[in-house]
Length: 236
Image (cartoon, rainbow, N blue to C red; front, top):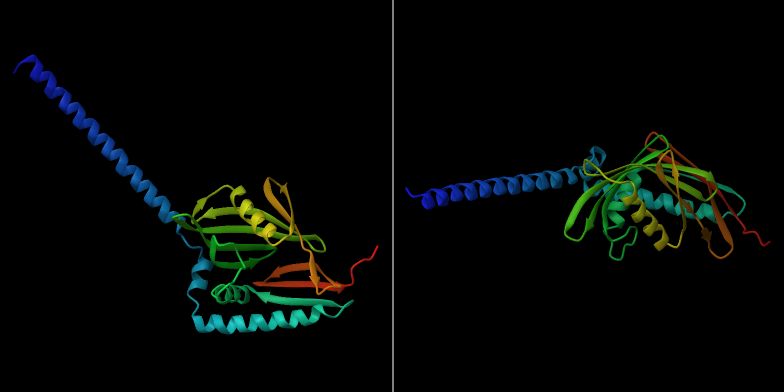
């Protein structure tokens, strides 16, 4: 074998080796992307539990939720009197599931579907399917909710995940701020112990002459207790 043939053979082996290596790297990257995709689809336990609830039960719970909303609506009309309401996570999840299916529903931005939540002490776990272009995954947020003063709701982003993958807490902040601003609520942003905090000013008017004040929010045993009063606005 001549020198040129030997050199040419060696080059082919090197090129073949490089091709194998590049193919291996490409396949590994595809595998990683696939595993990341699967991780982004992971459902929290409370989310899976809610998806397993039958349609008939959701309809009954939604009917109960609408009754509670109607009762609360009547309480808002009593100026100068206090009001209170109790809602379970199951009530709210049924309301989301049924009402969002109605034509023209506008409870959440279009990117958010299949919302679901659960309560613990002063904390809410919220999950939903979020879609951006051709990508879809399960967003899971752990939120702290407090009322430092009436109609001033502070939302602290304690944790944020896409499936099981931790993501920047600033990502859901943008979605939340956009959602509240689209509803014409005044929003302020800050920090608490390094966590992003959104403060929403709740301008809740009932009719033309009444102002609804939310001054209490308590989470306990899977139930949220809301309390407040209905007052005439100050004319100063």
